[in-house]
Length: 123
Image (cartoon, rainbow, N blue to C red):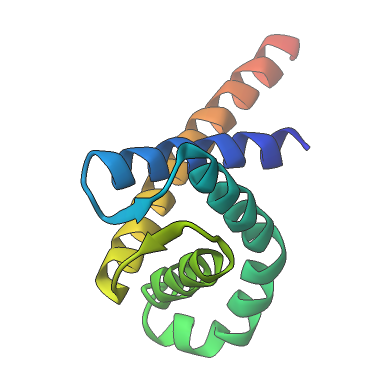
């Protein structure tokens, strides 16, 4: 549950920055971005594993690069389901996907480092 909530907040902050600072899309209000983040987080935990399994042969042949397209597709689906929110163009979907991946990777790496330090203190 903690992981879902933390991923939601990561998604929310990254999308807020990308929409308002870098103008990669448009939102009528912050509530629309919150709704997008909720939908994206839910799709990330439900649809992403299914798409990763289906696209496994292509992912192996492209050394994992195809996963960025899978994430861009999930961003696109979340964009469709969110009213009052729009990321225009496939390239912007891909950029949002890549930035979300990089930020999530860094945060999860930091989270793992903290867990390892806690385990080492116990041992």
